[in-house]
Length: 170
Image 1 (cartoon, rainbow, N blue to C red):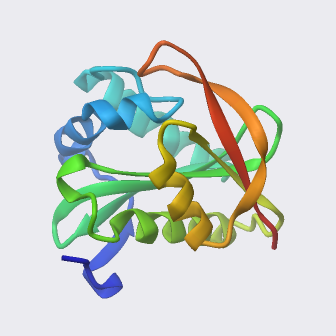
Image 2 (image 1 turned 90 degrees about the vertical axis):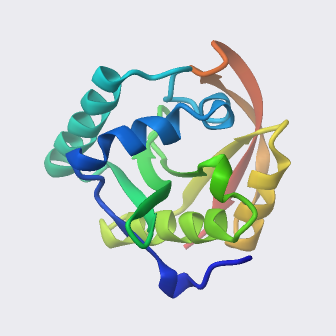
């Protein structure tokens, strides 16, 4: 069953949701398809990530995480960050228990809106693992266009992985 956008919202992940955040990040497909999440993150790592992202958001506005909530349940994440090439890159994830309900599409749009709300009005980029084509379909629905191939280091896989790059022009 697809969720209505009005059922979903984004907000900063409070410390009291840190265990739910850690459990979401610990889902195997989440770690393997992202660059910055290690396999089996522990609570210390999770709390440090939340603190680091809050600090960077406050200092520069160039890296922001938001939880995607359905009611009071944390079901995903929307993020943007300045990547190694200096571009503003968006990302999103949804825990396996909540996939197939339109939440990834919502999270992708939320990440775009979040970047724009922080004044990033230029081109946005995204990358997805070549063995994760569903993420590419989500990006295409949001208006992203193919922009070649690349690679990134997946902490969850412990190796560099091939990816497709996507661009969203202003």
